[in-house]
Every structure is written in C-alpha cells, then in structure tokens.
Image (cartoon, rainbow, N blue to C red; front, top):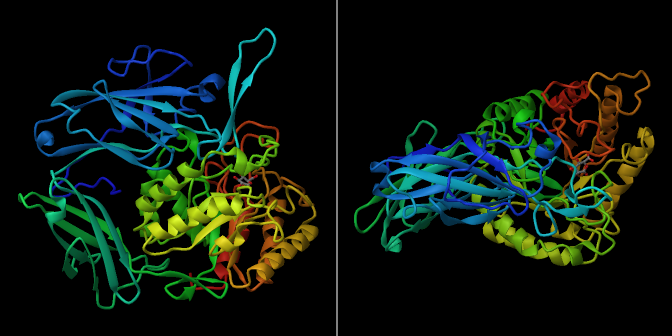
Length: 595
Ligand code: GCB
C-alpha cells in the first residue's frame, strides 16, 4: 500500500480540516445521502473524545458519523480517483454521494477505495460512519457490558482489555489522489549490505501485466546509481552507504510504469540498505550487535488524543535522541505512516507492534477488567482478523529501514493451552509476507513464566514485560531484582540462543513528588527502580535490550489503579522530563555499543 505522494503522474489532495460530526444513538436513523442536521465541528485528523467537554461525550459507546463535502475539478477526473484513510478507529463504513463504497475493520492501518465512478465533477458528499466498540472479535479486545440499575435507563459500557484510553474517530489524515488508468499499486524494495537490491512491483488496470517497468535507485542527492527493468528483479549498487542509527542514509527507488496504451505512472519509494539478523543471543544491525535502548511508547498527547500530530511526533523523536535511546516499540498498535517515515529519517529502530493487545480474558494491566472464567483461546474470535491485520501491517511497513522486527501481540494469554496453535500460523504468515524475513516476537507478561509460556520457541527473540517492584514486591527493589534475575535466567536456560530483552518495566511516578526514602510514586523511586533493573541487565550477557515502560504519561480508562492516567512515563504527558530521565540519559549514553 503506497503512501499518497505527488509525482509527475499523480495529484494528491488532503481532506483534513474541520468536518461535521455527530454521535449516534443506538437505533438512530442514518441517511448517508443528506447533509447532517445538528452536527458539530470536528477536526480531522484527531480523536474525537477530548474535543468537547462531557463524560457522556468522551465515553460514548457505539456509532458516530463524520461528514464533509469536497470539490472535484475536470482535470482531476481525467484518470482514476481514490479516497484514502490513514486510519479510522475501530471500524469505518464509507459512503460517497449516497453510495456505499465499503467498510474497514481495524483502527490503526490505512485503507482506500477507488471513487472514479462514484465521484462527480463539482461538489461531492462524503459520509463516514465510525464505530468504536472493542469486543472479543476486534483488535484490541474488550467487552461490552449492559449495566442496569433500578429506576435508571440501561447503560452500555465498553470495558477495554487494556489500560490506554479507547480514543477513536478519524485519527489519521484523509486524502484523495489520482492515478493514470494503469497504475502502480504497490512496491516492495529491499537493499542489502552488499549492495544488492530487490524489487517487486504490483500494477493494476487493463493489461497491467503487459506494461513496461523501469526502476532507478537514486541516492540522497538524487543521483542515479542503478537502473533496471521488469516487474520484479534484482541488481546491485556499488558500495552503498548503509542505513543505521548514526547515519540513517536513505535511497529512493524511482519506478516508471508505461502501459501498452502509452499511459505512464511514476512513484518514488524510500528505502535504505541495511540488514537485521539474530545470532548468539544478539540482535545484529548490519552484522554488528545492537543493544536496544528505549521505550514502549504510545502515540498520544494533548487534546487530539491519538490524532496525527507532526509537531508532537518530531518532538518525541528529538527527546528519544536526547536521552540516548535508539529504539521504541509501537505499543500497542502500528503508529502512523508519518511516524515511520520520521524514524527512517532520524535513525530510530522500531519494533512494529500489531494492535493485538488484550488477548487475555483473565488478565489486564489494571487487574480490573478481565475476568472471564473460560479459557482465552476458546473465547476470543479474533484469529482470522488477526491474520488480516498482520498482513496489512507488513504490507504497509515492509520497506521502512527503521522497522527491525514485528510484534504479533502484547501480553496475550501465552501460558494457556491453545496459545501456540493460535500464534504459530500468525508468525509463519508474517515471515511469509516479509521478503526481509525480519524477526518476529510476541511480547509476554509475568503470568507466562519460563515453565508455563507456550510461545517462546515461536519467537526469534524474547520480549518480556515485568513489573517486579511495582505490581508485586512493591517498595522492595532488592527482592524485585532477585525475582527478575531468576526469571530471565529461566528463559535463557529454556532458549539459550535467543536474545532476551525487557519490553516493559516501570513504576507510576507523580512528577514533582519527592521522597528522601524513595517511596512508591516518588521521582526517586522511579530512578532507583531503573537503577535496580539496569544492574540486573548488566549482569546478564544475553540481555539484548531494555525498553522502559513508558516514554510519556498517557490517558487511560478510568479506574482506581490509575490517577489521571498512567504515570509510568519518563516524561510527563506534556513531555517534561522526570528525574529518572537524567539517570537513563547518563546510563544510555554510556552503554555497550556504538548505536
Ligand atoms: C502492561 C501493559 C501496558 C500497561 C502497563 C502498566 O503490562 O502492557 O499496556 O500500561 O502494563 O502500566 O500497567
């Protein structure tokens, strides 16, 4: 799936801005062909939730509608016209001029519709129905509960099986773009360390298979360093400048498709020459060990919730550099395409995580919302959708040099019977779809021990989330360190060749709360917590990385284990450093490898 880019053969128009918006009641009548009545202005892209006051507004469960008009001019109607959404959370049903274009399930990946037939020169009416429910069929997972109290109206409550706030709406950019009749639908490109470059082009349109394809590899200055032909092929660039965290040098693959009838489509895809591999408990970038330093990170902040915010994402990556980190995990959903592009450019390594969080009907991060007595894998109905999402994620992100690994899920019930059978086909599919064969992992929690975990062997490297010293052994960091080390040793004995890293460890910390005795919730406790974990990592040679939970404080569902959100951030929600930021900065600036 190509990002909408202006080229010599394509026009791109953003449909971002203020749309009309309305929350819908359960059985409220819908008419996609008419202008909405009683609508309110709503910015796109943005989560809708925090834009207006009111708990019922923010926590609305179910459907909502977005609408706007846009004008199509004669020249735009010459070729094909597409409508593309960066992401709509969680399901979208899209109508144009009263005609249904289609729907999409999954709130964090792009989708598009061809609208050549349904659009007309002049004004067009675009209507999008959005549903924000998470249940046992969606990723992420949740539960819908009908609450009844005598004398009160029945109330539908959506309990997420995860702690982050269930932000929703049209959260990423919307575009229309043109292509010629025969057009490039997808490009796959992989540059290896020795300069070999592989490409595969997918084209659509009449006799697309008979079109002529020319490719050129361009360096950062735009010089052509290789020319080839054909829908797929390989070539070689002499002494390529490799992409890494210190020198994130990018090349471009320029593709030209000329159809039999003479129409030409052009597109330029960005990529880098670099290789990721795993050997002897190490993750290797360009054959050199890379110790991952960084965070689990949510894509959110301020009033737009999870809405695309270029200033915030650039600032976040600037802070990652400042603190000496080299990587993060897109916990717990694929981040925006713009974020991936920035990571390519700034040399940040990404573990690209699917939105499969909450696949555990007996447990959640808050300990409050799980509670299904039946087994997870008999209860959930996510399997087919999960496959689809993994495919969509690989399709979208495959060419990014920043993506060094895929995470199929966060904290599933990996200790329950059925976990292996659920995940084995997903891991295989992910590998099959990725020509780079990047490492795949499943991030596991402390309920899944070295003895009980059913998925460790499926993973190329182990990513463990541990909260010893917080959710248990709280206040006793020496005890926590003993427990942590024991578990890490246990996993190493079980999988002696695999790199092991921490995917999450952290302590809720109220910015500005200080305590001479480093008590829970104080800035001192968070710093001591980081120090204690760091000492354990330093004592174990097979540890391949440390991702702290979490980069910044973030909004959560309301519950008694969260005071105004999750406060495990090393930065506050408005990105001010807590004391532990300075500890991590000095630790990470020193640490073990050139990256
Ligand atoms: C976890 C989850 C993460 C939570 C975190 C916490 O294990 O993966 O989503 O936010 O714990 O703070 O409890």
